[in-house]
Image (cartoon, rainbow, N blue to C red; front, side, top):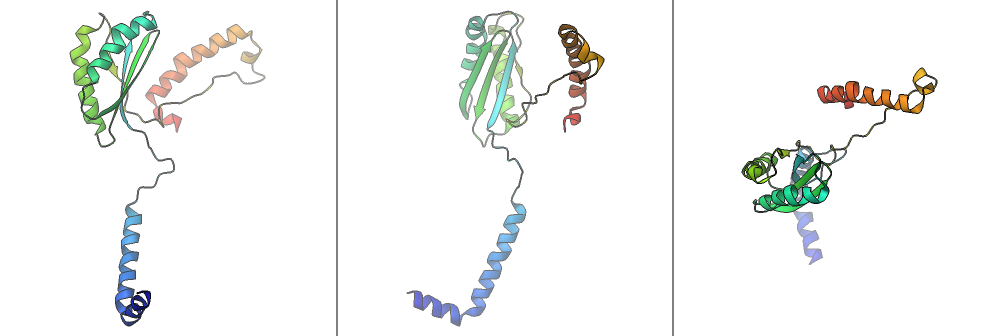
Length: 184
């Protein structure tokens, strides 16, 4: 069988060469259309619902805020998973959709359900959608420390930390919110 295939290839050299050229052209076209990224984003389609709960204890947050929101969002189409976090002052519910779901469609579905549950939550609490972000873009860590040898580094620790916190709250934080390109 292999001998017959080799004989056909030797007798039909032109067809073999044309076939190889066609495979090369299709390969070059496919490579040019292939998305290449240094750090590919493999995160799933998810929508985050945050609710500031004030001074409620985590048990109360779970019972009165997180559970009702989870229950309301459980019936959405294409939902794969619902995760939640309840702690002092915060209820966070993350709804994970299937990969072929459009993120803005998913956000619209979640937003509609949130609007319908607002009156079932304790008064004064307002759930909000988190920003559209990926797992690669949610965390940015930095430290504000005094330079060695400056007057700030020679101050008592409490005064130095108070000053650095003021710099963080009134200079760095607003600059990051207004000019996010500074982070790049």
